[in-house]
Length: 159
Image 1: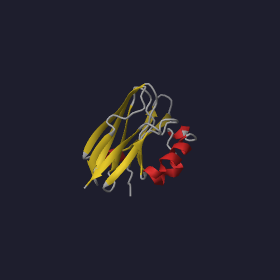
Image 2: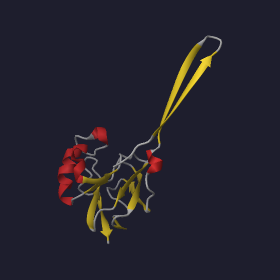
Image 3: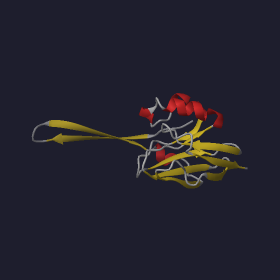
Image 4: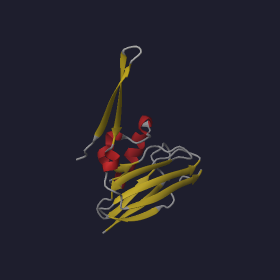
């Protein structure tokens, strides 16, 4: 269960000269500050025009909270998506063609995903934080149209 805390600051300013008043409302989402700390941060990059993740393989202990920092030093937009099963990648890649508004992540299939990033344009860095799934091998993939056939890597979840 995720709890969101909002801080609301209401300021009333009286304008003595005109007798009018103005109300300013400022809302701040502090839920990001309430998240537990990450156990490790892993940087994954895309470079040039090649459809590859670097590194192509990462290993993390299961149950740990990990942050993937995806740095797009390439010439094309990319995302990084971690499906629950490699068997779902083809269907997810097909559905991604119709998911441009969500960064080519088919959110109607969210139950098939462990984690996903926003779309990173060339020169951008995006991050995604998640809890490493049970021991096994999981494929991470770029679902930008045409990339899923060659732009993937392996996350090894260790005991």
